[in-house]
Amino acid sequence: MYQEAFDWKSFLRKVAVIAIPVALQNLLTTTGSMVDTMMIASLGQTEVGAVGLCAQFSSLMFSCYWGFVGGGMLFMSQFWGAGDDDGINRSYGLTACCIMAVGILFCILATVFPETVMRLYTDKTAIQEVGVSYLRIAGFAYPPMVFSMAMAALLRSTEKVRIPLYGSIVSVSVNIFLNWVFIFGHLGAPAMGVRGAALATVCAQVFNIITIIVLARIQKYPYLLAFREHFRFDFSLVKSFFVKSFPILMNEVLIGAGNMTINIVLGRQPEEAIAAIAVFRTLEGIVIAFFAGFSNAASILVGKEVGAGNIDKAYARAWRLVYLCQLTTLGIVVLLIALHTPILTVMGMHGESFRIAFGMLCIYAVAAFIRMGNWAQNDTFRAAGDPAYGTILEIVFMWALVIPCVWTMGMVRHLPALTVFIFCYIDEPIRYVLMQVHLFRGKWIKPVTPEGIEARADWTPRKPKPYLRKIGRI
Image 1 (tube, rainbow, N blue to C red):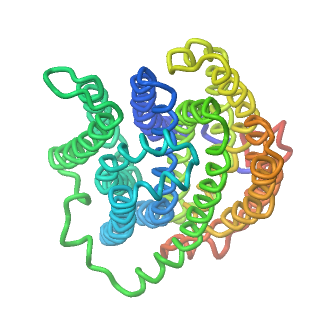
Image 2: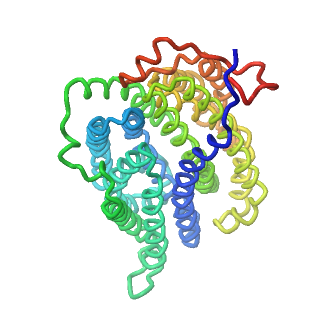
Image 3: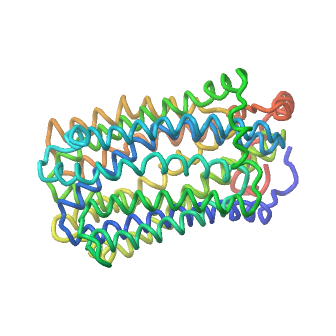
């Protein structure tokens, strides 16, 4: 039995309201990274490679704190749907405390033990030396970076997506301007090279926080500045928060460790390949920027309806968001390939490094379409209260299949960088099939609010079939 026709117009409007500002915010951040890379490229490929490897260390930090952000958004979006202000405030307080601990830890590692960090990522002495000088300063950007992420998670979960966008506009503008000042020594400042880029990053993160707080105050946003309410924890919420966050945290930490292992392998490639990888990661950020918009839309729009007890609506939105995300990803990747020559050239790629970077883009064009579908489904499951299924799949496949293959091809057989790179994505098609089955079964809907729990008890999924003829109905 089919319900009435799905309201695509209203659905797409709600997606756009959330996805576009989030995508623009992430795109701005990626644009700032591209400008960084272009400026640093004028210093040489060694500098590009070193800063790129430092960015991988930042990505490891991201993996360690994103589990708490994912858990926080699960609770905040569902409490938002249920209209529970107290639940929103306490969930944000828990999220902020947890991720700040991670930010401080990585700040200490970067500023006190930078030599150890760089030796882990590469065996090239010249790259290590440049990376150490960068990390000693850039590490101070980590605490404000993760704090702004906590604030953005709260604002997005309550559908206030424009404030983080404005914060990013200010942050990226400050970063680009101060890069120009500090890297090259303009306006009377000393020419600091990569250390100047690190200092600009620290300043930009501070401006981001200030902008978000000021705008929240001006708009009289009720949650962000309610400091007394943030830390009124009770045992049941803390227990539920960590139970739901733990699978996500383990997923992100173990996946982060797996990605670090892959980066260790790639960091043993020739310097041209290391520079190409650094540029590719920056361009990958453009794809992820648009993906993050749809991912956040999925988390908020699905989580909100699950929390409010509108289970049918949450289910109907979920699979449509996954496919919208994949189509958007495909379009962005095709555009990057079409414009690869001017983009790679302006980012300092030439000769062998250009060839490797272009090869990575071509491989990624196929992999990203499937990979972003997997990510979108996993984020949807998490927002609806099921953090375990996608987590288990991702961890098992990475450590049982991807890591052994990449390590064997790179460290044992010493195959070319592009061959090693292909094996980074060999698990994605298998996981996609398994995730699709789980998506349409609907077992991932596990509410944490009383309204959602009551509605879920009597609900069974109405699958979208026949799919091709009645895609607008469920």
